[in-house]
Amino acid sequence: MCLALNRNELKRRIVECAKIRRWYQTPDYNGLRPRGHFDDGKTNTISYGMGKWNNYIQPLLDKVRVGKDFIFCDIGCSAGEYLVAAKNYGFKRVIGVEAARGGFAQLLLTKNLLCNDIEAYNNSLGKPEVNIAEGAGEPLDLYTFPMADVTLMSNVHYHFTEANLNKYLNLLADKTLYLIIITDEKAQGVIDTSSQFVLSKATNGGWDLVDMILTGTPDYPDMRHLTAILLKSKRLYKLRVDECLKKQIDYCDYNKTFYTKVFPEFIECVLSGDINKDNCQFTIVFDWSVSPNHGSTPWAPQVAMERTLSYINQIKTIKEHGQEMPILDKQYFESDLWDGNHRIAVLKHFNIPWVFAEKWEEHKRFTKEWGYL
Image (cartoon, rainbow, N blue to C red; front, side, top):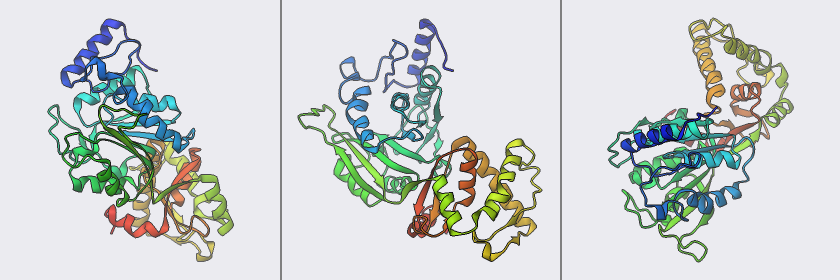
């Protein structure tokens, strides 16, 4: 439940936040708006505030056909104005990442007053090559960060070096289906801010162009020279969990495997507290393949303990944050699943209908990128 503050207390909190960092976004806090970094004549024009959402972000979201279980992430979200808009648009989960300490304080105020569903992270995407006087959060670990259907980077990407931009575009292609990048063609950045530069980096970093909203057209007489770019990952797609299970059953006698006979009981024990990292003496017999033709082979005690601990972490992580890594399959599940049976079982247990998947042919690149090999 969101907080209910009287007008004087709300003003006090807005002023306190402004002392740490100027307001770059000015959310409507029940009829009271902060005084923004930009003058009142710009705050809600086509290229600022909700004008940017209405004229650049939402038209691109309309191309995505957002479903009721979709996840939205805003990297560099400032006060979280677009997270509230995304929740109202229809996203089930909204995740905000803000590096600056002052911006994060504003984000928490928005969360507490307008949208308690916001999942707030005080992290930087690596180490931005700009001086944030008010301090930045710890670097964001994309490996453990929740996967998303749509990720927004609005006027933040040009605060990174070219090397870091290349790195994170590649990593995000394994973490989010769609990426919206908004750039200011004439901004002063660490790197080139032109849309042509962004597109060249993105298409070489695992992305296909879906659509663009160009600046300077009669329909978009933009004073900031903004360009919004909608990209789709070349590597990721989504599958229904039930469909995955059906295809596995068709491929082998899946209902007699570890994943359906033993693992569901294990999930229940973890969630009830009967099994935890300090008490995980759980004997597991593991089918080395989904196919029953290979038989069942007991794990060595040390291996069983290590894997049990990893499964405990996986169950708790999916419960709290959702899926963090895609499953890997061979040919879109025309044959068998290469990796991800445990995640599918956990997603099924929590009634999460969709699973993020990655193409089999991307596995070697995927593992090298994340440091597995």
